[in-house]
Length: 276
Image (tube, rainbow, N blue to C red):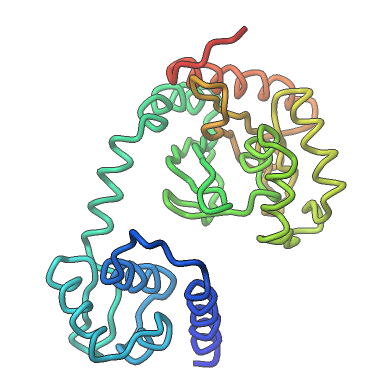
């Protein structure tokens, strides 16, 4: 209970900070309140009406009408057992449709499968969302290492190969601002935790065209990633091959990286990128 209370307090503080931000005069406040409810429930497995009221900083009387509307439309669901609310089926339907229409995903699927077929390890397609890496697609191979990552899950930029591959293509001030806000939490003893070390790592990635996660987020796992560029030459995402450490020995990294880079290049070309 204490853990949930702490999480609720953190979310409440975030909501209060958001309320202090400069308002958008074109915003529809009732829509914003409804979205606050959906976002709050996305951060928690379930919440009572009272807990929701505390998090989104809305009176229960007006919040109840919003909740009923969202429940009627399938965006949230109410448990018959305890009366708590959770996300409904509609966000899943919308997410599924979004992924199906994603140009990045559509361009990457066949190329990802080729990489899986060759190596038998897991191939990940990621993008940057809300200053974190989000997994857009994952294809597991024969030698798939049991990981917690799944489509829609997020991971820190500084500790992942895909995150570093994307960050290497961004302006340094953008990366600095990102890690300042998100922090550089050590996930393993190998995680990069300082900006100077990250800056040096990103320079190396730009020079060789690929990034390596050397047990930086999960001990016993290694990952090689390369950035995907769009028709404007800007980074759109990253693709990676990941698996158990013994399948990614030092002497094999160069060959693996060449194939990952070739895959990223093929996807980039499908997105309209033209090499000069």
